[in-house]
Image 1 (spheres, rainbow, N blue to C red):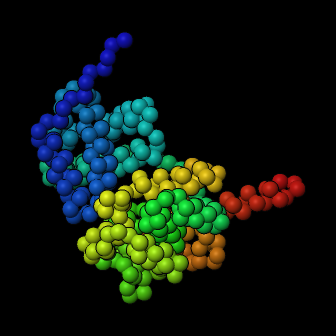
Image 2: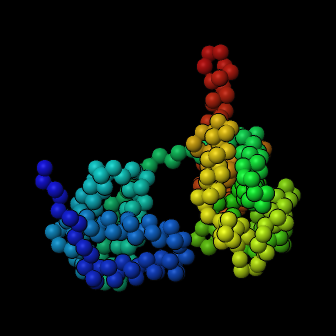
Image 3: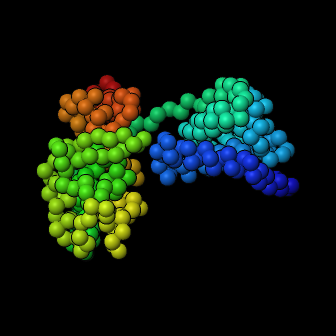
Length: 313
């Protein structure tokens, strides 16, 4: 079997353009490091495809000739390589953003390439935990570690995720200056630099206070609120491992992740009569349509209950 040719290296002018675009995304748009890495991966895949597709390394000026067929060929190559519809849609979105930026810089019309849209991926419903399972996995964290302050730390983190609906990155990004909550709640800086105030339940305040009382490192304004074993900022992998051990002990599905506690917060609030707009504010969603997906969880559960109980279902 003939081996495919190796991917063409980026031309220096294109590598410089890509670096500048990523810097713009990170600076003026305040993208997270994870998002910047994903953008870099997406654009490298696209530019290396163009090198093979056109037989020469991609150059900024040459992008002016891109058309509908080139973008379709890229999409087809990515799908044949195993990229899912959702990932391809994200990748094409990053490519379109880059093309808009570089066409403005280079002074060409990129509309033929920009006209191609990605596949519409069906949005999967969130997989929240039942209220009793959410409480059980938090209780399990309290008994999961022989070192008392670490057990208290893990309990405090999971309690904040479930009790406040925080993203794991938001909880672990808290610094000493953020605690205790001031002005009616906890100030959270979420995606896109959007800030919101989240009320903190007494049980969550008590959990964090218990952790801070036992933590061997003094709380500092510029230091992390939640610390790892050696005093640095606690990482997401450690919290994920805590959840993994808890779900294994309780027989919960693989979807019982730290982010599932955020889903559980929203779903249980909605089931209890919470206002959708208020839940949107608490979660820090930019669009109400993002929050509305939780109404689908309630509808799905209602249908499951109907089918299980109705004799003719």
